[in-house]
Length: 444
Ligand code: GDP
Ligand code: GDP
Image (cartoon, rainbow, N blue to C red; front, side, top):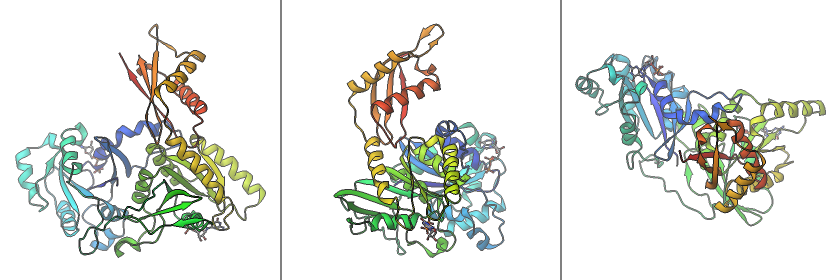
């Protein structure tokens, strides 16, 4: 399970600076995709090979009128859903009344809270410790987010083995056992904005003939994992929209949860992204798709509520989709009605194909042959009078497939040439429904 850490604190303590620092390694991928802006509040990050999700809760000032006001916000939902809370304070300005109110609130929650004193660069370390320890949340960890100081030891304290637990606990604090029910098969996450028809689609997908649903397996957070078989093939559906089972607190507040969606994306092999044909592609769709791309998951797009649209509306929606979803060209699109069931069976065909493509295994010899043919067809450009040299390729990972190319001066490969190679590999290997990544390992 991908851990979630929430950044909490007064305005100006450095939450977004820390957020950017933790998630920045991923920015390049999204920046490449025209039309996508990053959702400032949620980000995917990696520490020592382990992905995790960072949430910048933004809004807490500590002066909210009564706890109810705070409770109503997304900030609180994020705290509730997080595995660990990083409570940031400003080492330069010292402890404030706002810090104390937030601390009081956090002490009451049953959460792992790490007290982080930011802006260590402008403060005296010894005095900070005493001052902030008085918040009753343990010794502060000093960092300077703006300068990248002490970030790694902080992450070690938070994400290091055994430091936080991602298990779910019941009301008595007992760990809820996750039964592992075989077969797992292709893990499919059905995601999308609220009300696009996810629950209706999940019911359809499971309600189809010849689907055998097993006893419910591990339930984590709000998502429900449903293993089943269809035509003797194993699948697990990750249902982000299903029955609410969690604490009453935010159950009533909001059914849709970004964190849950991000975790489902991380955990899935294939994402079925549901769009409401009547709304077209809106900003929030692009944000969510951005996360799917960042995670490199295989993707199938379901344009739902296709029933009851007249011909001219259909034409219009199709044109709009071509325009706005240009960056997901690798993904199949299906026009469906989850309500009536039309087009739903065909989704499986795309899901299976995307899964196979995403998990493909190709020997180095074959990869290198493809590379050589591609280079012979269209040479990489000259850099400083020397030609970029590509020697061999191997498959460095799956879901998404990572094509690792070895050679010289590869730092200088232009983006357009990388795209060319991507397309060649995609075509020759018949990879459909999955993004591909190209990485370079330069010998000089
Ligand atoms: P947020 O409101 O909590 O998200 O705070 P920001 O991340 O916007 O930071 C507020 C201000 O503090 C900005 O001017 C940052 O440049 C500054 N800041 C953030 N981290 C540090 C740090 O480590 N040292 C110093 N000196 N300033 C910092
Ligand atoms: P979720 O929030 O994404 O899980 O969306 P729901 O499955 O709860 O559906 C939201 C609303 O859209 C409900 O009223 C559904 O009956 C309706 N709906 C779902 N799929 C379709 C469809 O294919 N066609 C039409 N006309 N309505 C649909």
